[in-house]
Image (cartoon, rainbow, N blue to C red; front, top):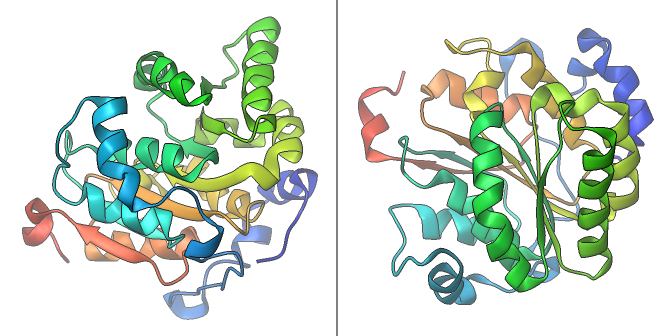
Length: 261
């Protein structure tokens, strides 16, 4: 995938039709773009450490169904789509992945109220590894925003990184552009929560999610993890297309077997 500056993406985001043509295949077929950065050799600690960090960081002795397999895919740099039930531990997949990978994980989620609570819980745990967790939004004061960015930049400059939570509405914010231009090489993982919202075929379509496909072009060497608790086969195909996922691994919880059309 071609590297582009954030300012160029912002111009594209002002006109969906202009940039959507780059990622949506003609006739509704899937269009994949090969990412040259994928491959286990360029990634972090490895799945062998996942069980010990799972216990140390989260206090869990065992994985829930599909978690270990999803984390393994993330560590090997493969794009992954995971359909897991609510309460199935989706957030742990990118949180644990972030620690094992190192570098910066960007999490795009519309659940801003839950994110602030999640950041409060995960931040002290990540700081055990010299990592940081921040949530950036337009509701932050200038001072709070600046402090959050400085903490994240310091963690990345130390070579550790952390987790950056943002909403899809915040993607075109110019302040975010300044930050990510300086940290783009640190990004290892882009996680998209509630990924079904990107599909016009779903019941919870949110136009703001259409920005994510273009946003992803900023980080051609990062893998993408899309997470949802509800997605029919048609919606899953749309998620893959809209996020320009390259030969993604697909994990579907047992609950979804009756909703596969």
